[in-house]
Image (cartoon, rainbow, N blue to C red; front, side, top):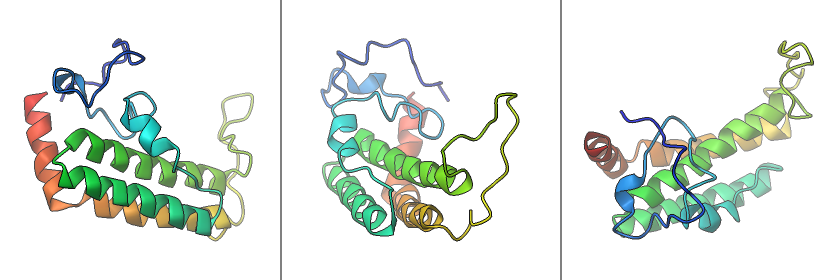
Length: 153
């Protein structure tokens, strides 16, 4: 697996153009989710996890985009949508665990988890995103395309 390439000039690369698509790297987890255009701009405007109703609307919209990219056989779009769903899950979990979003104290020690970390509104929002992320990540066509992309990286 090739690592995500942070040395590229992401301000000028349009990953939807055929001549640039080979530059895209899946990376690990959410790497590149806020860099790869035009997908970042298209998807990010729908990404919200404030509460359950917001997470439902956001995650369903992003999953719909995943399906639209899939219909166009656009792996990069699918992967970016999956990354935004993943990021919705992880960020909502972060705020469920630590209401301020700050995980560490000044000494780099992990702060205690909130007492309602598993039942709070953010925890429920995280679950919404996880379910949509799982639909995308375990989609059989996505998995085949991901293996093919990895082999070509």
